Amino acid sequence: MIEVRHKTTGAVLVRLETETLAGASLAGADLFEANLAGLDMTGADLRGADINEADVSGARLCGAQMDGAKLWGTVMTGADLRGADLTAVRMWGTNLRDAKLEGANLTRAHLKDVNLSGADLQNLKFDRADFERTVLNEARLAGADMTEASLRQASLIGADCRYATLVGANLTRAILRAADLRHADLTRANLNGVTLENADLTDALLSHTLLLDCRDLHRARGLESLIPGGPCALDRETLRSCVAHLPDSFLEGVGYTAVEIAALRALYPPQ
Image (cartoon, rainbow, N blue to C red; front, side, top):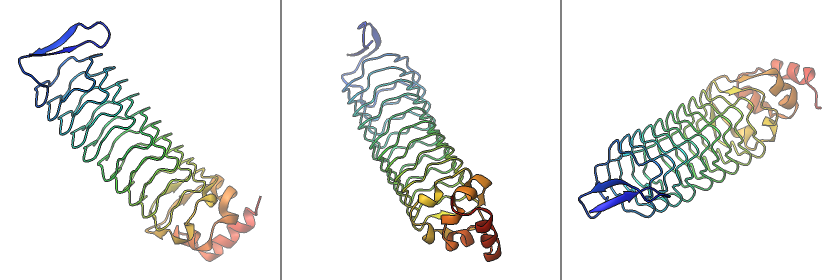
């Protein structure tokens, strides 16, 4: 028999006639504030479970079915979530520092206010996920699929986003300072008010991308080698701050003619 207890009171929350939680059926279980630290829950069924504010640090959850689980304020530092199905999980304020997430599926996951600094998230599926205000500094996101994801006010300082798919992603007010976006697909992405200082956009794809209020666009690297896939939108604030310093090849690539470029440079001389 195995018992799952409350992390502070010690009250029994779940009692199972088994010696391990590996492969256990806990779908919809009430594990609020449970002590699950260090437990082996490999392949467990935790779909729709309430794991809010629980201690899951160091737990083994490889291949666990966790779609729709609630993990608000949960401590998951060092948890092993490799291959776990985290579709539509709610992880607001969850601490995932040093968690292992290789092969996990985070489609439509809610990851607001989550700390993922330095996390290895390469090649993961995050399409339509919500990363609002999430900290992804120095995170490894190479090859990640973030199609139509929300990264509003997220911090990606120094993040490795090479070959990432950001088609239709909302990056409003995101901090991309020193991020590596080489070969990233930014088709239809919303870059409203992003910080791009020292970000590397070499060979990134821009097509129908919104570059609004991007006042440090000219401080990004690799602009002369961006791959234009279609016209992009630059607003007055972006042009006023940057057009005098942007390479002609970039401006032509996003849809301006030589005559228009000359007129814009005359209208907005170097400040």
